[in-house]
Length: 169
Length: 403
Image (cartoon, rainbow over the protein chains, first blue to last red):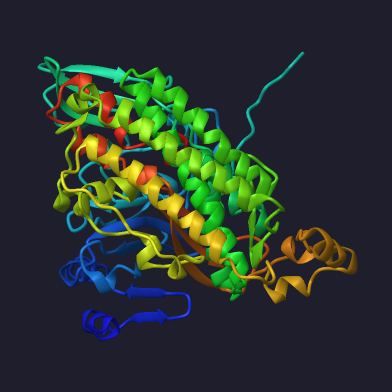
């Protein structure tokens, strides 16, 4: 089985860097994502290694890394499945004390847990860190962050934090 | 947007009838080898549902590494995986080397494999010791932690540090083999082989241990693949997969070793496989010390950056000091991914560079994080008294899972 041919049958947008062992499928259309994931699973990519976001000024790229335990000649491949979503405009809001703060709305992509159940904790982590809502995820709750990080999306590049106000007299 | 998904710990969110079952919170004050909370729904003493609540030792390693120079991520990733520092270091350096396009010389490759295998033995002994105390055997706990010491001393002899070695740098390693290392290593390996027989007598073949672990926490082969678990736990379920074989790094393509696999995938198999892997590591260390080639321990690209004083130091003491290049390193734009088989399983790194002083995106996944489905899927249906057995047998380490 030639992996390049098989991948190019699934998607026309395959980036291969042999030297770095990088295989990447860039998905343009969000609605095609689950179909592509299903055909990758049929090819033999049976588990998710990592799900993460990459924050750019105008968009968020969501990357699933998948690999195989069951098909011998796919065991050496780390395949990235990437989709980019445009970020909504930040909303200015004020709290009852009159402080103005900026709320950054989350983005939405389809969840691939129905295809690869092994991504369940990874997708929860990407959700709390980047504000990516995975539609169809069975259990999308915060995983690691405490309550005071609600909707702050700390791994985005424009995240700012306030130092704790401690006064010692 | 559904507001419900934001509830961090809402009982209503979990589809188990709350009136019928007892909810038991285990943790977060150190239920095992670190801080985590295991929330268990119980019907009598039968486990109905488990929800692992992690994050109590979340140390924001990704956030910190994206705001520091490239080389400064090495101590950060090491401190996350304390029993397994060399592999975290090695995985990160492999990824950076892919971005930089540097290939270390053969002697450095062998030294990397050597220190990684020594580290694997200490990691497995740590796991066996923790498993021992979980089952109530303080003898095995003391033995395993005591027997880690000779190997940690070996690491200290080679790298200058007991645990957080920072031994592997882009392009090579920092120290060459010291005098007398081979003889010392042979003594330690013979000691460990002797001790493994004692472990089998008192622990592995002990009827009490067998009664508490056989057929407890069984994960079938198909489920192990679907849930994406890693490392010795995966191989205990009968899946033949080892990153050292399938994506060879360091000197593993030149070393002859076997990947042990088991059939049943229960807690007892997960114990046995760690003992088998220690035997394989001993075999590998002997081979490496016999076959290690002569030559440089850093790539030419790094060696040429050394100033005359550093070069003199390198020739006399066989020690690589950090050239200024290390702190000013700016790998070319692009992305790289690398995998390393650590003691507990597979570490995955994915780094995106924009050619800047800092990494643009620094993503890494640790083995314990990927072994989390053991709690949610394997413990269900067992008695509560079996939960420590399952926890101990998967060699879970919360600080590593939280990163």
